[in-house]
Amino acid sequence: MGPDPSGDIKDGPLSEHQPVVIFDPNVKNDAHLRDLVAPAYPNFRAVEVPYGGHTVLVTLSQTRLLKPIVLGIIERDEVIAFDPPAEGTAIYHGERERSLIATDRQAALVELRKSLAIAPSKRFFGMLVNLLIRMGDKADAQR
Image (tube, rainbow, N blue to C red; front, side):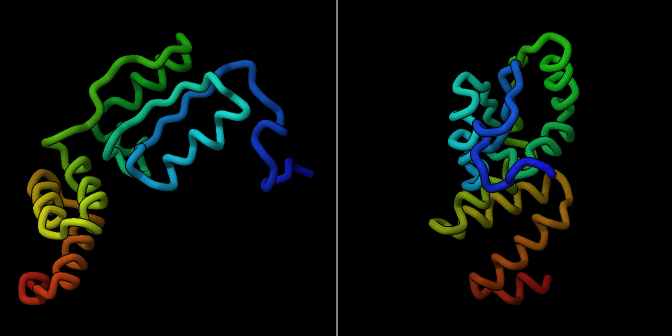
């Protein structure tokens, strides 16, 4: 029988190594990782990738950062310094839309269009169509 999934991480078997947690602090559910890991590993290493999305490892892979980051952790137990995807990358602009949609739909629309101009994405295209419909611009959504 395995560990109780409803228990705290600190109550389970712990590693002698301090974990590395890679996440997007702008993704609400992912930001809670700090609170989940800290009781068991107070000195854990947090690697924040703003607007990297919930699938932050995919984002890092697409920008060719994942391999050197993982190798640094595995081979030398260090987190290498890196510049996270930022302004000018498709994922950054697409994820930025998520933080703007509730407060500024027009700015969110601009971010999605920037993202799609950089690289096609079924997910961001669907979000664009959905946003246009919610904004009442059905003609543009159909185009």
